Image (cartoon, rainbow, N blue to C red; front, side):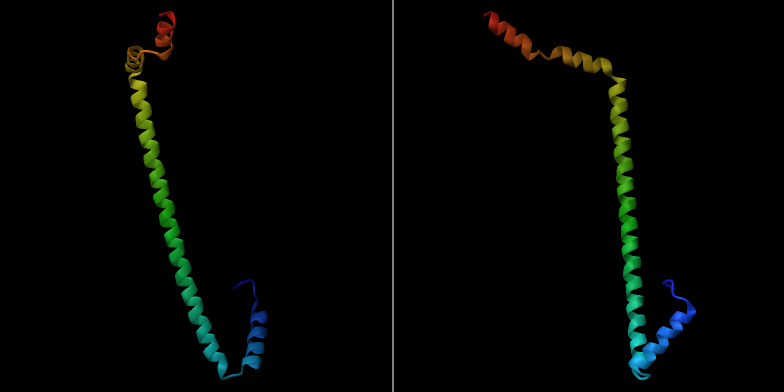
Length: 102
């Protein structure tokens, strides 16, 4: 427990009993216990939220990779279509050469 041995814990409890007194010690221990419980709840909730967000982002990345792979396969399937499309478009350099000659 936090690297504290049983003898150190006993010394801490005896000092707390002497400083706080026997009447206040149970109230303070109860308050401390409630605070620790609340801290555990909050940290557990935070950890769950963080794990959920990480899983969501990983799923998004997988979907993106699948979409990119599909696009890559579509491009690889039809290289002749890409060549035909580039031949149909007139180039700017050919237009400028015609204007220069005129």
